[in-house]
Amino acid sequence: MHDLERKWMCGRCKVEPVKRKTTFTYLGHTFSHEVLVCPKCNKVFISKELAEGRMAEVEEQLEDK
Image (cartoon, rainbow, N blue to C red; front, side, top):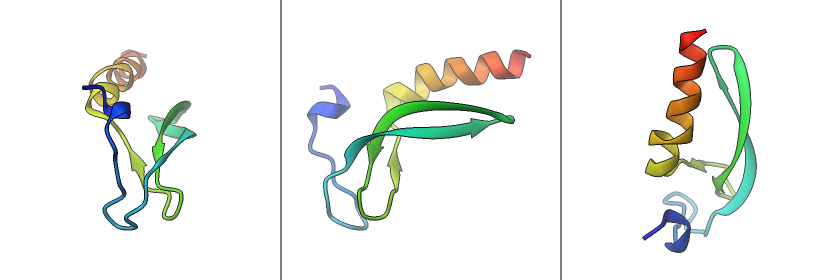
């Protein structure tokens, strides 16, 4: 099952997160990606697929520079 098909809830606020373009900074470089974010507390959810996929690729590219 894909993460976006699940019904996620913020553990703190007990509300469903929304997709929002979010900016990340790593090793002085900034990139953005659309992720699930709690609309109340702004806590970001990073799926395992994103962390091990695209984010790992970006991390590797930046570290190789």
